[in-house]
Image (cartoon, rainbow, N blue to C red; front, side, top):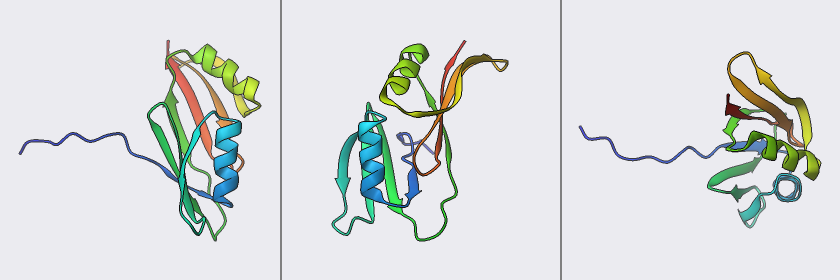
Length: 117
C-alpha cells in the first residue's frame, strides 16, 4: 500500500492559562499567536513552520519534553538568551555529538534546542 505524506506532529501542551502561555511564547520565545477558542480553553502559536497548541489543564501539569533542531545553534542560543528565556541547561557540546541547550516555559515544559556536531 502506498504511504501518504504526513507533516510533523503538532504538540498540544497542557497549561494553566492559554492566553498567558500564548503571550509568553510571543514575547519571550518569538512565536506569533495563531488563534484562540472563544472560551479561552485552547489556542495556538506558530513560528517558522512550527505550531504548538495549548489546552487549559484542570489537573496538575506534567511537563512535556520536546527536541527542536536549530540550523544555527549559537544564533538560536543568543536569541533566546537575549529574549529572557529561562535557560535550564547552558549551551555546550555533548558527548552524543550534539551541541545543545535547554529552555523551560512558564508551565515547566522543556525544549532541548540542538544541532549535530
